[in-house]
Image (cartoon, rainbow, N blue to C red; front, side, top):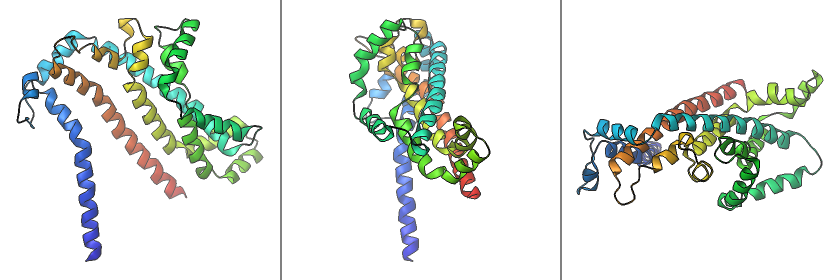
Length: 274
């Protein structure tokens, strides 16, 4: 009886947490189907309206949505692939290899996580100007191709997940450092890489401040910068803005559903193998 009550309370808590988590997305979808006047109405309307197509059409008329979408997809995909490669390589090296200065270098790496990213905006812009990368996608991709969090995350995961005995067996078979990383470590690190990939992609997709500073060509605007132009100086059509936001969020929801499924399947596969 006690177990039944505890299980009931547990699942009730899960359901409440699920509703709280999903409600902002539901409310975003509802507002995207309403007019600006209906958004401000009281009491608020909690069901879908009939203005979605009209709002989406106005978004397409005011910004180059598909061009910005492709720009964002390109930048986020390139950034994610580079982060996965360099962070996994560095994290695996920190976890399983000894080299001079390893401890202090890792401490320095952790210290960089404590500095607010806004402090690096001016120095980063100056460096990009020196390279002649202002206004190009290289300025959005190259500076972020490795980060301290990703290295730390992979290092912590690899320490426990990658057995040292397996690496020793690989060395006996003639594997070099890179082959140990690519053929031995990467298959084991797939769950950690799935999370890091989703985390990096979403962060790059939602990045607004750095693209706003570095891009000066409207044809290269990312989605967040393009959607920010929907805000009027004096009057803002919030129904149109919310509709654009909904269109920008949908790919992330699809990515999350795919990656979460892949993440769970990788963990299950690892549990079966062990």
